[in-house]
Amino acid sequence: MSAELLDHEMVLGAPAAPPPAPELAPALAMWQQRLGAAGLACRAVALFSEDPAWRAPFADADAAVAEAWASTRVRVSRQDPVALAKLGDELLVATHLQLPSGQPGVVGALLAPPHNDRSLQLLLLALGWLQLTLAAASLAHNQRAGELLQLMGHVSAQAQPRAAAQDWINRTAAWVRAAESEGQAGLELRLSLFEVRRDAVRWWVGADSSDAEKAAPGVQQAAELAQRALVEAREFSEPGAWALPLLEQGVVVAVLVAQSPAPLPEQALLILRTSAVVTEPLLRHWRDAERGLLPHLAATLREGWRKLRGPGHRTWKVGALGILLTLALLLLMPVDDRVTANTVIEGRTRQLVTAPFEGFVAEALVRPGDRVVKGQPLLKFDDRELRLEQGKLRGDREQAAAKLRQAMAEREPSAVAMASAELQAAQGQLDLVEAKLARAQLTAPMDGLIVSGDWVQQIGAPVELGREMFELAAGDGYRVVLHVPEREIARVAAGQPGVLRLAGQPQTGFDFKLSRITATASVQDGANGFRVEAAWVGDAPALSPGMQGVAKVTVGRANLLTVWTRSSLDWLRMKLWTWWW
Image (cartoon, rainbow, N blue to C red; front, side, top):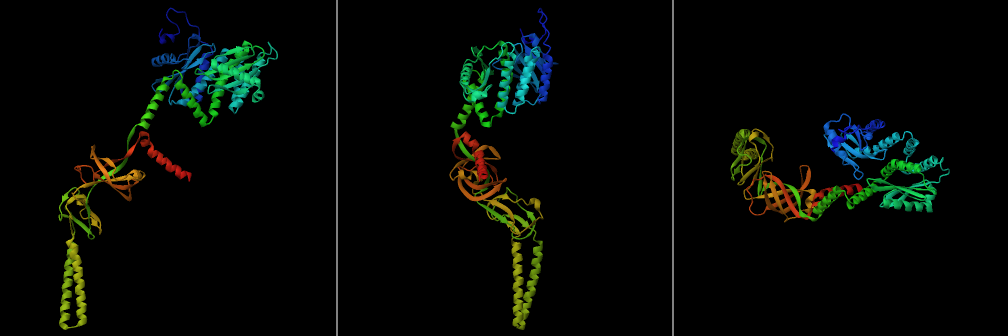
């Protein structure tokens, strides 16, 4: 029979199904409200069981939700108590639920975003309340439900998990004694709760803590009974003793042991089972939450190891195998250990052309990228003021020469000396102006390529003395200049090979070898680094000075993990050094 037919109230030819339990709908509604109060956006809830009295479909559910609910709930079992399904941006959670009748059921919830592990944990924790509510409603005519609720209230009021466990075990023992006081006066009962750690039972709390702390023989006997229940993973009863293993996903996590000289009545056992199943998970999760980070980590590792070595859990085993293969690849596969650096191409011989005096640009004859020959005009300065000054100084020189001739004719020594000085001063100023005029036109000092100096768009711009006007690179070869970051310079040495890829030719790699490491640091793109020069290996490619790219220098061999984590580890070492001292 298909899953869809199971959701209908009746099947063709079958008798009408019994009405649902009256306490089911209110319990589900209150559970949905509690989920909302806990911060979970739950749109609808549902319950399914083989018993038609314990069925409640999703309210106002469309066909997609009904189909997803039918396919998801069949994946829930005692071994896999939780199943998930994605419906658009909503998450359908189906989980196992023990019904008051003793039959298994599946409860579902439609959760709106966000979805995370905490949402699932809150839902599973609230599931205990739902189970308790259903049990209490089904036992409305029995005082056990009220006693159980009162017991949970007292336990929840404690501040520490151990105190809560001690209060629970004491009140449960008193509850059993009070329930059996009418039929059997003076019932002697000793309860002990053992937790399971590393496949061994450890005493946690007992109804008689003083004897437990003294390691009384009764406690030792209870420990043997708990260990037996752990090994057999089933409830057993024998004269004078009874043990109940408490399971989580099929694994024994705690054992409740009761010791009594007389056989325990069935009513007492029912109270013990109900109280333990409802309260023990709360105590255990409470105690686990109180543990520190290291115990949590150890418990997680033990749980993971148990899943890996035990049957099933294929996802865990496949994931662990993938992690091991990845680690083996990272640790055992050697690769080239390389240093990355920004790179620029420079001419082997470079020369600067500077401004000989202050002036204004009159004409620019070349631009960057132009090839020039030695003596070729590059730029002309505005020389009109210089020529006017040249004419004025020539007139001054002629006047000074005339005065000198007149003084010599009059034969006056003092006048001759003064006129001679004026002539020399006028001649010196004229020579200075004529020298500036001779340099008013900048010429190429050698054959090469104009690397920098674009003055075509700056005609008439003022220029100060000594300003760099042009940079020329000779055509006799190029060299590679790397800007190696400061943190990597210690691993770089002359003679190491490398590969360069230029921004204009990213598809081609050019081999080079480091030739010189300078001790001068410079800042580039906000990072401090050092200048490292390299030479081409083989024939130099067709390049131009000023081209930029990225170079990778091979400094040795290392595994992938070392290569990928070196920078982070170096940063961490520096931070620790800074903080420690």
